Image 1 (cartoon, rainbow, N blue to C red):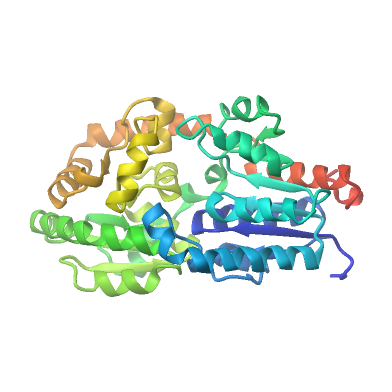
Image 2 (cartoon, rainbow, N blue to C red):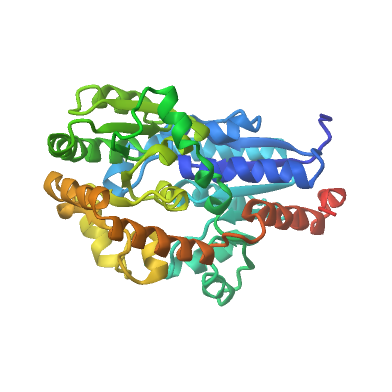
Amino acid sequence: MSAEAPLIYIIAGEPSGDALGGRLMAALRERSGGALRFAGIGGERMAEQGLKSLVPLHELAVMGIAEVLPRARRILRRVSETVAEIRRLKPAAVVTIDSSGFTWRVAQRLRRCGETALPLIHYVAPMVWAWRGGRARRMARWYDHLLVLLPFEPPYFARVGLACSYVGHPVVESGAERGDGPGFRRRHGIPPEAPVLAVLPGSRRGEVARLLPPFARAVERLARLHPDLRLVVPVTETVATPVAAAVTAWAAPALVVRGEREKYDAFAASNAAMAASGTVALELALAGVPALVAYRLNPLTHALLRRMVKVGHIHLLNLILERAVVPELIQGDCTPERLAATVESLLADETRRRAQIVACREALRQLGLGELSPSRGAADIVLSIIAARGRGADLTAA
């Protein structure tokens, strides 16, 4: 590709953002006929689209005040390095994805450095409807456009003067529902009748360290009830090593799998799932796997969040449906006893299993399931902004 082709700089700060970034890059390439170059920060999915990340993703994939503070100096250094690279490369636009602790600092620094003409676009809105409403006003000072995943979000940002477009949630185009369960069981020697539990302890090292111990003890209880229980443990590269080392000592055989296709095949082979709260919980819902979501935070972080958060659920589909369709076991409720009992009910109670699957499907339709590909919609908006600024008018999708 010509070195004169427009460059888009994309920044993702954690694996869920990396997945969005990979799909966005693919859609941008498709909608522009391949006439683009990319630079930025990302992980596995963005690397598959040709990105050479400036920063290893695991350095940025941290969450919570207590977790960030010990790494603050390194993160701020990475902000400076990122801003310097953007100013050197002079991209047609910068797209930042979620991870506001890092990405917003980059945007703020760029504006303070005088980069007023550079289009700055943010993908995934902060949950101002859940907490800290002042964040919308802060974003409006730095960004030109916001791409949001939920249909009710644009008014929160329009009222502070930030241009905003609803594009839908990219999980609906992930392919999570197209896994090959029987093929997965054959490949890995899992008998058709054996119960399979998908275990997903997270993509950040801190959350993995907090969830693995109660998950392990819950598995001990379940293995006593189901001697033929098998575990499948999809992992991202950011946490693959500690997770693989931990599950070797668990009470049931655990198969660690990597890669998106193998993950979705594992979902299709699973009877239930025990997962950290996050994007993967949406993928499980799309795949039709009855699941619980669990989360533990550093006690200081949890105490601060309890004072600020205004919503009653952490699973997005529960928020949309306004009821706890998917069980949530958070902080003190995330005990081995409660985890095991909840998983057992999902394995044994067909009525409960079916009710969760049907309700989640309805909520997913509210996220854009069955409509225009969210990534293509997002790509079209990015290209139109670049064209409007005279930085690549020939790239606008036909």
